[in-house]
Image (cartoon, rainbow, N blue to C red):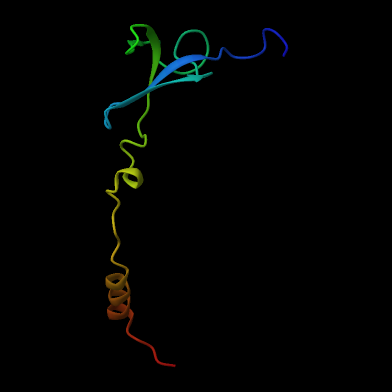
Length: 91
């Protein structure tokens, strides 16, 4: 690897506040220190160390697909509405 051209690969905490989930992983994402996106905030992790934190809007703890709170569409009702509006055509 060439030196000086690669972003820093370091431990980062990703946190989903709506799903009450946080996990520690390694990433090259900027957290506000230097280049990249983020706020430059840190959080104290379970091991007592302080790590940069990135807040995410959706994770497996809050996404409807993973939580089982998906909306079920009534396709039969939609078809009946279509036939009521436009009539059944026999042809």
